[in-house]
Amino acid sequence: MEKILMKGNEALGEAAIRAGCRHFFGYPITPQTELAAYMSKMMPKVGGTYLQAESEIAAVNMVLGAAAAGVRAMTSSSSPGVSLKGEGISYMAGSDLPALIINVQRGGPGLGGIQPSQADYWQATRGGGHGDYHILVLAPSTVQEMVDLVSLAFHLAETYRMPAMLLADGMLGQMMEPVSFDETDKYPPLQKPWAASGHGGKRPHNVINSLYLTPQTLENLVVERYKRYEIAKEKEQRAECFETSDAELVLVAYGASARVARSAVMQARQEGLKVGLVRPITLWPFPEKALKDTLSTAKGYLAVEMSMGQMIDDVKLAIECQRPVELCSRTGGMIPTPDEVLAKIHAMMGGKA
Amino acid sequence: MIKELQTVFAGFGGQGILFAGKVMAYAGMMEGRELSWLPSYGPEMRGGTANCSVCLSEKAIGSPLIVHPDALVVMNRPSLEKFEDSVVPGGVIIVDSTMVDAPVTRKDVEVYSIPASELADKKGLSGLANMILLGALYHVRQFCTKEHLEEGLKKCIPARKAHLAEGNRTALQLGYSLV
Image (cartoon, rainbow over all chains, first blue to last red; front, top):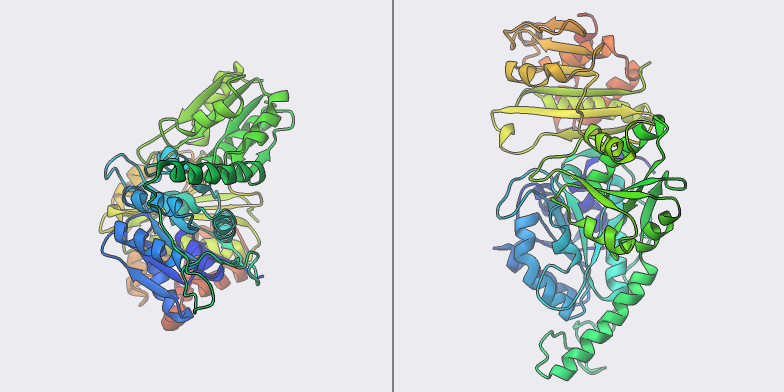
């Protein structure tokens, strides 16, 4: 398949269309606007719906409606806009609806800035809205992976009947890299017997709802949902392990900061330092198994993030605090440099080898 | 041929900074390199400074944000001031001397001052100083074959702007002979 150069944001749009998504509800915000713009240009050409809603809240609720009807639906935004979508995401989780939400993160809190950030980790991996629930969270680190994870996100969302979020950032959204697209959709849409898509008088009607006034009923539903979450945790953890087989220091980083960490690991290896990188591809479920596997050689861990330290909590939980875990981070739209990470590696390993 | 090259293009928004980087990126792709193209984005693009980072390599690109460029192409004075010190020793700085009225003070890098904007105007290639400078960079740092560079340029020009291809190519070729 021929490779083409695409911006991350546009590649996300193209990948969604190729994954059979024909319903996009958006609202512009830097640095994800090119995604909405791409959809506005392409959706009419494939017989799909591009709708610019009056707000992020409206957009996410349109996604809820479309998902309830059983189609592959999505919305995208950046950090402040995703906060607004929190209500709809919670309602979708409470209604067991699959849908895709893309967050091209920027600095926060508040309106924050427009430069790349990873400070929405907690929001994404803890659900983002009210109530007991999780969403699936996937974290690409290249433009090609943005493409590959879109169809996977729809597939997992449908498999587990959960909203899925693709957590990117301004760097990945804005940058161009060569990408290729599969000729055939790896994960065609699943059957949705639960969808409110018209019963034609042939079956009882389906109800999509998240309101349950009887506590016992609601508890039962939430507990059932958590059983599904356990299956997802068991089966869907994904991570890339780079130079970890003998690593005494294991870096943990996802998305854009994983690229920075990888550069630092390569430099450290040239210096003879036994350093590796675990790059979570799924943030929920967090790749606990991949991290536990590194315990046999690791003496310490270093979380590299574009936040004040959020994923680091999950690293500590995954290894059950059996080793020291330190943080190398920038925030507010600042991007750590490989030199900064390398300096931290040197500090943790007691100088150069 | 150079297989690893980290280049920063910088200037005012509207000078074709991002486009020059895109041509280089496409040329790298034609050459079969790993590559990334990362623009500055946001309010700075509107009349202020714009820049982009292009990484070419045989290996997967780590951080696409270039901290220490091997090559710097600058089209305004604020960009020279911002990026001059970041260039690696032994690197190259290419300056549009029509636009930059200050000398490059670094002594440990190759410097090529080319009045690209003035030349472009004289040759009927107004607005194509970016391609002249890219051609000059190519002449001193051959990061791909000439065929791939010109093929890369073609890829960057959409069909509805096909009439601009010839001028861009002429400007690029003019750049080859200036250093």
